[in-house]
Image 1 (cartoon, rainbow, N blue to C red):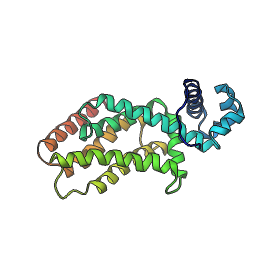
Image 2: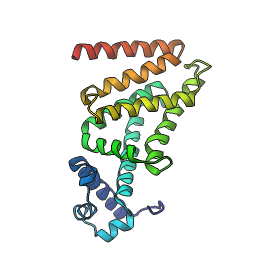
Image 3: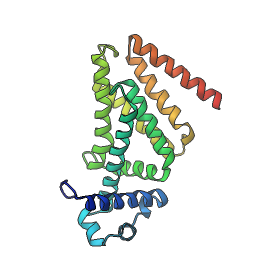
Length: 221
């Protein structure tokens, strides 16, 4: 993929059009159904232009995903007035569940692509390392506030939270968890882990939040 540089309004509009078509084709037909020549036709660009921008289908999917995630995190930030912290983490997983439910085929393609990816490649960086770093920032803020127990290893805890997060996506992909239960599963998982590592008023508030989520889930069952 070519190096990032400032785009003209026309180039930016073309970029969003291409990425939007790519996401829609994956959502409608899965990763295998995204054909570069069809992307070019629907986005109203020449195949040569498309291949100059994205050398392979994987590069196009990665850029579509990167753009999607940037927008998603911006929206999470807009509803997380307090900034990094445990409430921000809840917003991240809650929004992830909403996106997974709204675009199931696209989300399945992303998870499948992640399973095919190799250590150190761009997709692993984006979906694992970048998300783990985002989790870590919130945990470090919690530590500075005294909300985590002093002996907690925040980097290790961020890795545990990342594993819980992506394992839920994997279970849904393999039919072992229902999409309708994803939000509850993600929230219960992250709160259970955080409560075990927390102390003081934050622990009490998280415990109360977890109890409320479980009551609501039971009443909806």
